[in-house]
Image (cartoon, rainbow, N blue to C red; front, side, top):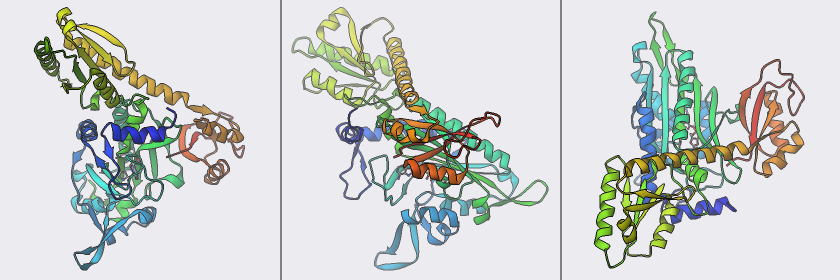
Length: 469
Ligand code: PR8
C-alpha cells in the first residue's frame, strides 16, 4: 500500500463505512455497511464480556464537582472535556461535562452500591459514546472527538490480588477478541508518564499499521485504590473492618474497526474476518435472457442451504455487469463470492472465489455444498490471521545502538531495545530519538548481563519504541 492514509480515507467512503463530511470536526456518521460491521464487532465483544461482566448504561453528563474530585485524573483530561453550560437560555448552576470516559460518573454510584464484602466483586461494563476534545490531528475511527463505541469495563474488588487477576483476565479477553478479528498486537506496560490518569499502571495493546506507525487499540488499567479513596468506595470485610476497594478498568474504541480494516485490506479493498463480515457469502448470478429464472432459482436455493448452517448470504441480482459486481464485493471484503451462470447450472457446479488470495475453486452443487463453503471460510480466516501476524512480526526489530533507532523507525519498524527502566533515562531516549516509548514488553532476568541502550546500566527490560498514531 503506497499511501496508507489516503487508502484508508478512500476505503471508508467507497465501502460505505463512514462519512466524515459531518460539519463537526472529529465526528462522523456510521453508514449502513459500516454500521453492520460495527454491530457484529460489538456482538462479538459482548459475548466475551457477558460471561463474567454485567452490562449497564450510565448518563452521558457528569457534574463538574464529581469530575474535579480526582486530581490526577482531571488533570489528565482537563484540556479534552466538552462542557454543557446552559439549559436553554439559562446558565446552569453547575456546568456539566460530556463524559471523556466514565470513572467519575460510575464511581460515586459504586460508593452507594458497595456496602459489604458480599457486594464484591462488581464487574460492570457499558458501550457508550464518549467525547474528547482531541487537539492532535483527528482521523476517522482512529482519533475522533466523539468515540461512538466506547466499550468500558469497571470493576471493584476486596483485595489487591483479585484486582491484579482481573487485569490479567481482561488482557486474556482482549487477546481472544483481537484473535477472532485477526488483529495482531504487541502488549506492553506503558511507562509512568503515559499511564492512564489516576491508574497505578496501564497495560496496552498496540498494533502496527501498514505505514509502520503503531495504534493503541485497547488498554487495561490497574487503578489500585486511588479512585476508591477519592470517591469513598468502602466495604465492610468479614472481620467487620471497613476497607477501600481495589479497582480496574479497561477500554476499547472505534479504533478496533480501523485496525481490522488496516490489518487485512489491500489495493482491491477490504477483507473482512468472517466473524464480523455483513455477508459471509455473496452469490453473483451470471444472467442471460435464456435460463435466467433457473439460475436465479438455484441461487435462492443455494442461499437457503447456506443460511441453514448459520451463514450470512446475499444475492447480488442488480442489473449491472457481473464484472462490476465482482469489483464491488472485492472492495467490500466479502470472504467468499459464488458465481453461478447457465453453464455452471448445467454442469451442476458453482465457482467459489476467496477474497484473501482471489483463488477460484469449482464446487459441486450436490456434494456437501455447505460443508465445503464452511471449510473455505475457515481457511480464509486462518490465512488473514497468519498474514497479519507475519506482518507484525516482520516489523519489530531489536537494536543495541541508540543511533540506529530513528532510521529503523523511519524504515517502518517498531524497535525493541534493552532498558534500565529509569524514568529520566526513558524520557531522554524519547527526546533524543523523537519517538515514543510504548512501554515494557518483557522483563529480563536479573543475571542477564545486558546493558541499557542509553546509560549502560544493567538492563531490566526489553522495551518498545515507535512512531505512534
Ligand atoms: C480509558 N477508562 O478511558 P483510555 N479516538 C478513538 N479511540 C480512542 C480515542 C480517540 N480520541 N482516545 C482513546 N481511544 C479507561 C478504560 C474506561 C476504559 C481508545 O482508557 O483513555 C484507545 O484505543 O486508554 C484507548 O486504548 C481506549 O480508547 C481506551 O481509552
